[in-house]
Structures are given as C-alpha cells and as structure tokens.
Length: 159
Image 1: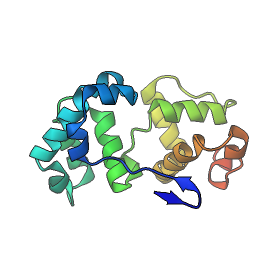
Image 2: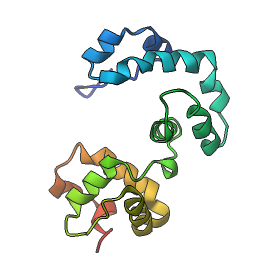
Image 3: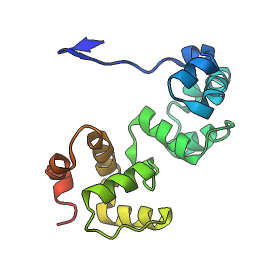
Image 4: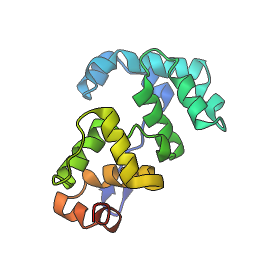
C-alpha cells in the first residue's frame, strides 16, 4: 500500500505462510526458523487458534500458544502483544529493551542479568512499563539516540 509516497506492506496471512517454501523463507532472512514457520502456521490453522484465542484472557492465550512446538514464552508473549496491543505482557527483559535502555541511558547501571533487568525496568516505569516499552521499541529504530532522548515520555524517566 502507498500513502503519502511511503510504501508499506502487510504481514502475510497464515495460509500464505503455510504454503511458503523453506528456501523462500531462508532468502528472506529467517534462517533456521524457515523450517518451523510453515508448520506452525498450518497448526494454527488446523487448530483454529486465531478463533479460539479471541476473547480469551491474554495469559491463557499465551499458554495455549506455547503448546505449539517451537513457540516459547518470548514468541507467545510478543505474538499476543502484536495481536491485542496489550503491552503489559511483553517480555520486558528482551534483548532489544535492554540494548536500547543501555544506549539511551548509559549513565544508569543497568543489570546485565535478565531477571534483574526486568525488575529494575518495571520498578522505574511502574504501571506505564508496557506503554514506555512499546514507545521505546517503536521509536528506537526510527530515531537517532539524541532525538529519542528528547521525546517527552522518555526524557523524564531518569530525571
């Protein structure tokens, strides 16, 4: 789709993913995941998981997704986050969050261990942890570090 001179692409349907060859997925950069993506897409279709998780509590849906071989805690949480927009369930100890927190606030002594980072990140951001994380990750790839630090929602976090 083109809008204001910018081309954007939608994510392919499960049916499309289920039909893709391993070679085409490898060519797109999926590496070892190229073997499992079509299988997982087929399982989701066969089990009618998209329909089943509609209206289901998010934590229950995360647990159901983790029953698929190759879908762990991180993948299930990120998938549900993308599907529902419920950022409170995002795996905040994610490497991307740790990386950008360290780049943006290098003066802060961020814990290296995932669990300790998770606790610190949640303590600092409180009830807004999901929103701050969403904003951080969305903006991090689009904006220079200097401009990102100027964003009001992020600028005040450590002052």
